[in-house]
Image 1 (cartoon, one colour):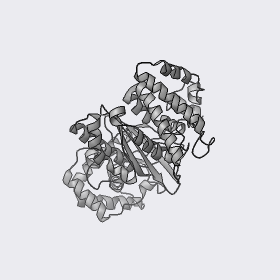
Image 2 (cartoon, rainbow, N blue to C red):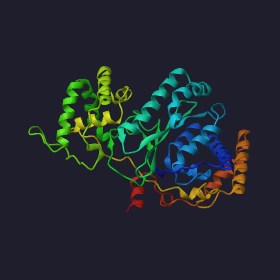
Image 3 (tube, rainbow, N blue to C red):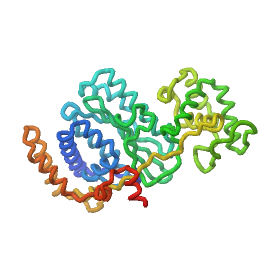
Image 4 (cartoon, one colour):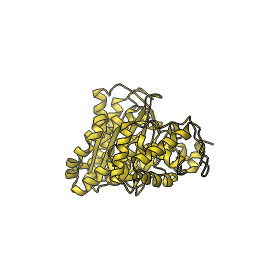
Amino acid sequence: MADLPLHGGHVPRWLAEIMKRMARAVAEVVIIERGTEGFLKRLADPYWFQAFNNVIGMDWDSSGSTTVTLGILKTVLDPEEHGVAILGGKGARARAVPRELGDAAERLGLGTKAAALLETVSRLGAKVDSALLQDGYSIYHHALIVDERGRWVIVQQGMNPEVRMARRYHIAWYVSEDITLEPHSGVASDDRGEPLNLAHKESIGARRVVVDVVSEGVRRVERMIAEVNAILKGMMPLFGPPLPRAPRPELPYYRPIRMSPRLLRALKEAYEVRPSSVPELLLTRGVGPEVLRALSLVAELIYREPPSLHDPVTAPINPFKYAFAIGGKDGIPYPVRRDVARVVIEELKGVVERARVGDKERLRALRRLASLAPPGPAEALGLRPGSVEHERSRNP
């Protein structure tokens, strides 16, 4: 995840054309050098993603880092030519993933079974960062990136209007066998909180109770929720083991549950489905943040199985140095240099064209040139971004 200020406005047409050409050139070099798998793994890395955004000339620290960058990539990458398709987008486009999957799967050479699996991945990925992880950010952008082998990456973004910030989430196929359990490939944010996190391994016990409780029936769950609300108001139970931790009213997770008709309908639907796992529960109609929060409080305050309040944030260094490549839309560190962008794009195009006919000398030269670039603080110390040592070097 990356915390980014919410920015309005739009990209001027002249800059959009530069960004398209630059994005295509960089993507093609990466795909030739590392294949579609290597390209997807880079998009799954929030640090690389932000650096890529900076290199093509977008604002170095805005919410558009996600929406514009993926929108640009969606227009310039052709599934048949590049072996990669980008589906979804901002607002209503996020809900277009199932519709776009049919065409993309056909153009990538994927079968109907793979397309159905990818649709489930998309639905579950959206629920992970909106229902299992409740951190105060509402998802408004969802993109599914797929390659010709069926590998996938989800990049989505949520906004918190109160603090005027956006947060980006990266989920990838290679991180976890269960997309609902610690599936993030990278998290980058200076803002840490204590969200409800049913996607964390510390929540295994709570997850088990949550799935079991929905099979108790709506009336039984209603009674347990009434007991939960009484405890949240300070009425401690006289019998049974002590609570695993004292409820903290300052956290949104611990506010009382309102028994709305929508919540009751969702509980009834879940009871009729009788899910056997968290993924099955998430795919049940109507099961969203409020249902998961209510069931989590039941698990903690009635069954003494507390969910995790761990914020899954790591904080790699901000890749601001990449904004110096051609400049930025916002004029930071300087306005976009069209002349520099033109030269860079033509050079990268030459690298791609020669590599495609078997002449990789310019590609090797580009690789040697990269070795001359000054290292970032972590690289200079020989630390791997995201490691404990890396974090300590940043937060002594």
